[in-house]
View 1 (cartoon, rainbow, N blue to C red):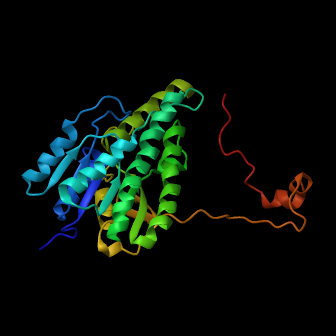
View 2: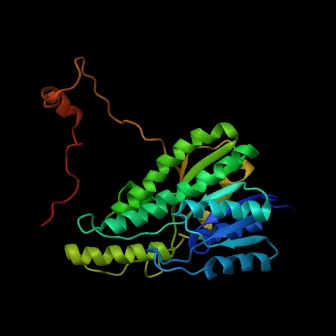
Length: 309
């Protein structure tokens, strides 16, 4: 029986390890030809190893699939262009783009360097733009295509991750916008917030524990995630949802953000105002200080974070 993606061509950034690796494997099993992009860096973007992407391509071909490796950087416009050209040169089309490449460099905002801010945004945010910018015209000409961008629950606000959180949450807004730009051309664009035990998530948790111990004296006690006792957060479960979003079964889904964690798949609602107050003359400082305004803001003005010692 033909796979769900027979005849399709996919480009996966960060496809050599972690969630990206599982996405590549499942795409190939479902019949897609795959361009595997991976620079082979550390989780903090250091170094490079072209063998990571090549090993994945070799594994796919050994199993009877069709894949090609690419070692360009998503942080460069020329890199994004060459990845898309790689798909066109080898396979003649591009149907699926999965932006999975990402790095992280943790530190409190009051210690963060400009370099650490810039490199995380260059890979995690600009790195999505560089591929979409060059893939979009091809998909528009084809009048079909799927773009899936990997975001993060960290974008909702996590300790010591202001650069990573903002870089990933920017991609949520980017995805909503391009869904409107490209939807009329038969291209659907969605985002995911996955939770999976990977090389990056393990490094993030370990570093957060070290910083918390140094800054706040919080004991670096055992963590079930790092101890391998946190079961169910498997990258292959994330890959299943991503590949499903690339099939025709979800061709009406566009501009949405999905949560994937353990046995759960969730759909995020669009941001909306949960409380609305009306003032006939418009709001000024006196009106905002009024008992009516204070009643409206009951509970909102409370600082939910503990003050530093």
